[in-house]
Image (cartoon, rainbow, N blue to C red; front, side, top):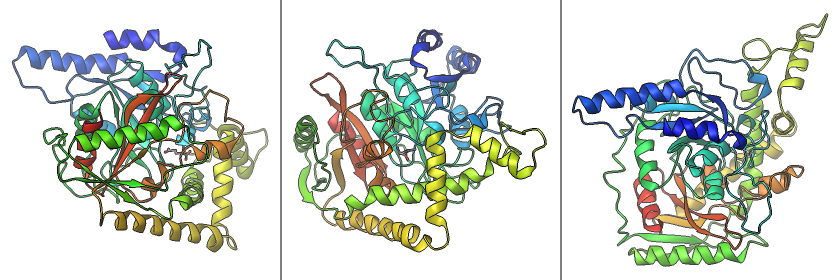
Length: 454
Ligand code: GLN
């Protein structure tokens, strides 16, 4: 009831697209009864969480913050949300996000942007971006409106918003969480993960979300470890690599200073620090912004006005006109930009020059990481090249927006687990995060290093 009250009080942040207080209360009720019966409760029993609107929820409208899905109420539950509910969690509501998870500021939502609960300490009243695409998740966890929320990360959408609002966000190894019932953006990159107050909460929540699912052909057929039980901030014997390429021009000195501080904290925890090089890092962003739109253009072909959500049928229109009118009215500008880029790079004549080339770069980036693992166990980098920016500051400049993903995209292309941990504030009082990247399936050591940074 406390959290439901906060959901109502937080309406100006525009974080919720749908509120589902009854769902959260029903889960609390089950928890109450179990407590009364003297039962031992599972780790997620009764916990009220926020659900990013990319997860299909049975009987609850799901739009991925796009006009084209307005009115779409799934008849099925995504595997990730079903797993969380099976573990006893309740849902406070569906969270606003960048439309189809395309964006880094939440401004591409068809239902208005989320506002970060944070302000600069300059006495001004600039509304700040909560990051994106999981900006609603970031805002509610950081505003203590929900103890935890689901996110999805295709190129940084869990980690960058977590860094912008001072919470912890974890993207697991590709394939840990089933993609079934999660609205697809770029299928070879999309991964669900937890966003919560701290490392321990992320470990608990990921245990509930993850697991093999035969309905997703890329789901990993592996048991889910008890990450929480094995948490250990003693990093003796661990080698942490510092990749020299994770720097951009004009990166605030405070981010460099924080990175140094992070290195010191990890040394204090017993780790050895080594310099490493990931030479193809600079090609990751261009490769991502070819591969992700290519996959998106294919995934979004299904929104034709027939099968889901909204339909525009002008008088006397034929089938083609209906497709065009529905897609013209239903998709936002950024989504259209991605579809156009995607169809272009996949078209005959350009496929080899762009798409094939980007896939080759993707392989080189994976190989960079493989080579780095010869000399270290984990990598430490900043999560983003800046603190949260003001809403509207980058809205008209897609390239500036894309550049914000420069440190999160490489590990997405390689499918590696990566986490953002809040580690400090900048001179304006805004949170900054550090990122830990691990080997495939080595979530445990990512969690452990994160614990050492807390
Ligand atoms: N900002 C990136 C993009 O717009 C990442 C989005 C995401 O991870 N879903 O593609």
